Length: 101
Image (cartoon, rainbow, N blue to C red; front, side, top):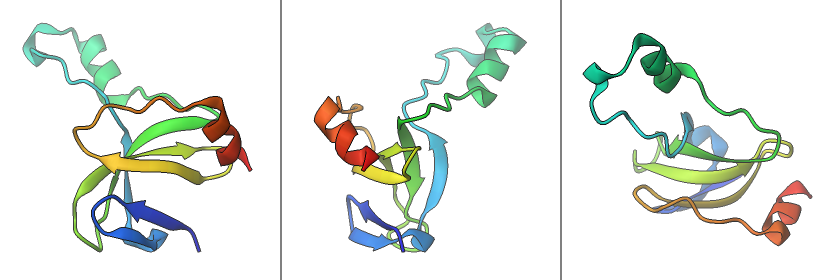
């Protein structure tokens, strides 16, 4: 079983959570001013890296709150979780190596 740390509730089983996509996507300030192509880019195009990615998660069967997480897509390990509104943390090479194990 995979445990995920909710920054509000602590460690819980993965079945309590729902992935809500890539984190830190900035909505256009004036959606009516962007082209259809730019709007489609905002809505649908996401990074899909091999390695660390910042994602938004929801503790849907717990507190119901959203939070962000840094997860390694190669191992499915969570490097860290943090509350919404906090900036994306800088992950050093040591933490990245730990996530890969």
